[in-house]
Image 1 (tube, helix red, strand yellow):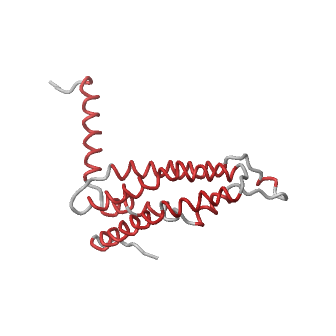
Image 2 (image 1 turned 60 degrees about the horizontal axis):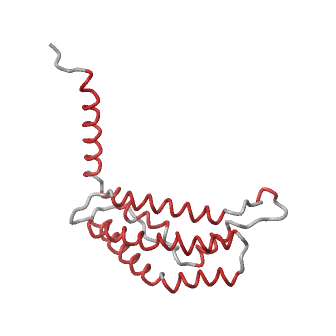
Image 3 (image 1 turned 60 degrees about the vertical axis):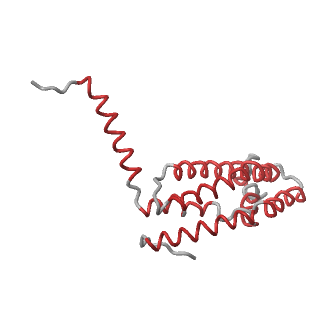
Length: 181
């Protein structure tokens, strides 16, 4: 009398999971979209700045009178690697965001900005971090930082400013509670 069988249970579970997955992705709230596509850029807002270079350098600081500050020698590289891993996650998350007339441009700008800086973190900033960990010569470290600033910062600032401009308009349109300091 009962047409339901245990054999159909795995198929039903797959259909339910697929439905939930797609309905969640298609119904991304403006707040969620904004958080993933625009707000996540706070992790790269210091790109090409002396502040970022200092953070990387400070990961290697040791203090003679504080034994717990003794470093293993890869702290700066770990710092950069963690930033790279986070950026890769953000890229994946932004790629999965739905597109419509309201979100298409912001999504493209966000992807473009992260894709622009990611190779610099993987190459130039990783080289800088290795020099910091090895207590390398200051002039070599400064050369890397100056090259990043000259070669990449102008285009980054252009991309970043445009993304923030579009993000502000999106936040205002959707009445999102965002403070721009």
